[in-house]
Image (cartoon, rainbow, N blue to C red; front, top):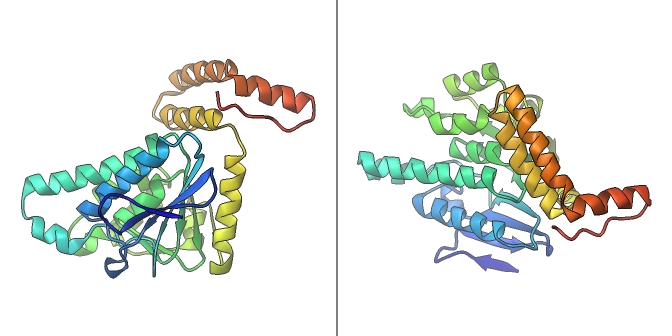
Length: 265
């Protein structure tokens, strides 16, 4: 089943199982560019799935030849006003923040190119997997527009030296190197990618929804804190988690050597 979002055919939600859905960027004539319309519908799609109590995992992918080429440069050139540029980049940032701050884990499934804001999307996702021939780049410097917003997401996933090389040269990196520097988790042949991503998604979906939500939120928040504050915060979060029914059920199931029956509360 494929559900259309709003009045566009470019952003689609595909229900894979009751607990796993895929968001597909499908504007192949622009290499799945992130136009105003596509970003708006992408944001709505993520919000819709995040509010689905039954859903546990979101997969993000691009249709056609590749993942996403980033912003639609023809649209960008036509904006021609500071306020419109600001609105576009603010909207793009909202999409990235929704992925990070949302309750559901998001897995990027990448083939072809993930460039500029497309690379930013990949870096914003909790996990990322690609084909062996996928390419990643922050190539804004080549057109006189430094990839300043994409570097926010990417620099939080990889070290500074490889990040600066990507930003300063604009050159694409291959999937195996993207894995080596931590931009993606793993790369596979085209025939294996979908199966491997689904395997990871199903493993995550077998866990308590509540526990995953608490853990994802805590992970990103503690990264921004000094060490002492991070320990204080995560101690508090573990205490809250321990008081949940699912923690008690999980511990009991482990000790009793049985499968847990999650209540997601």
